[in-house]
Amino acid sequence: MASTESGNFELVSDLDSDATSTRSPRAKGTRTSSSASLLDATEKLLASAANRKAKGVVSAPVPLELPLWPEDKRGLPNSLARGALFTAAKDNNREYFKGMKVLTLANVDIVYKGEELRQDDMSVLLTILHLARQRPLTKDDPVQFTAYSFLKEVGWTINGQEYKHLQECFDRLVANQVKVLADGGKAGYAGSLIQSFEWRDSEGKSLSRWKVWFDPKIAGLFTQDSYTLMEWAERKKIGQRSPLALWLHSFLSTHREPIPISVAKYRELSGAKEKSLAGFRLRLKAALQRLKDAGMLDDFEIRNDLVYVVKGRPRLAKKA
Image 1 (cartoon, rainbow, N blue to C red):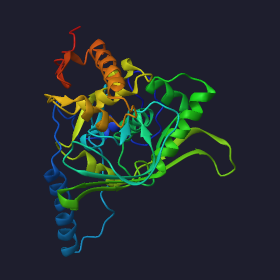
Image 2 (image 1 turned 90 degrees about the horizontal axis):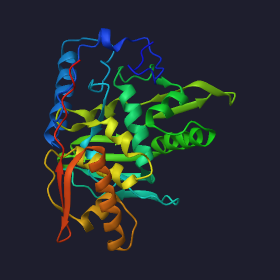
Image 3 (image 1 turned 120 degrees about the vertical axis):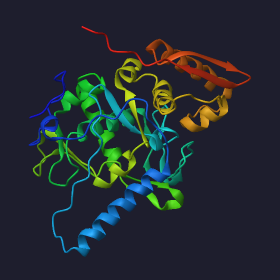
């Protein structure tokens, strides 16, 4: 059994990822949205398969894996954070999209079908991807965890309402279709964000440990330089009551030096639903201040309706 250093997760696996993995954590700060990386990875896999077939080699397919990042970080595909796939809306009415093209700054096209995803869904996806990095992505080895430990990790209250909330987030992450297309559609990912989720057995009894399966091809969103390592402590410090601050945290995490963007553009990219730009501007200022208080931003300014931000420098770990 493997667990996080804090002991919050009770993770069930036959693998000891620390003992068996030869992967090393990716250096902090490496991030891009390069479609070439996706295409190169795909071509290498195809070339390898063709070579093995030509030699008559017959074996089980090599399982795909997510990169192995540090415990205090969360791996975030740039393509999923630089637009309105996970919105900053905060009302109770979620829209249903029948193949919406997602507005994004990323060098990719995203088409989404399913119920509107928001920042609670993003927190759940980040957390389950974090657990999934400890194992190969195979059909026979689901990610398993207790609902209690999961709620603790995302920072939600431990009560019946939040258990139901967590189930609903997983349901939304399963019941969707997302296409992330790069290089004119030659590379990317198509499928649901989570392939399958079980929290009850065949007789309808609640499972002590919930199970989640991923489509192994989702690893294509984590090719070199196509994802970012997010500071998880910062996101938890922001809290769930400020979805725009959470969206900004994800968005700005994928930019080393953010360029000035208009208030109106931020409203579009975040999927915010304020009809009044003045009303959104006030919420944007409050969200940016929250990020500054959390230590992510050194400063920000809204001048001539352009938003300028200065990101905080990475903090070095204190020596014992």
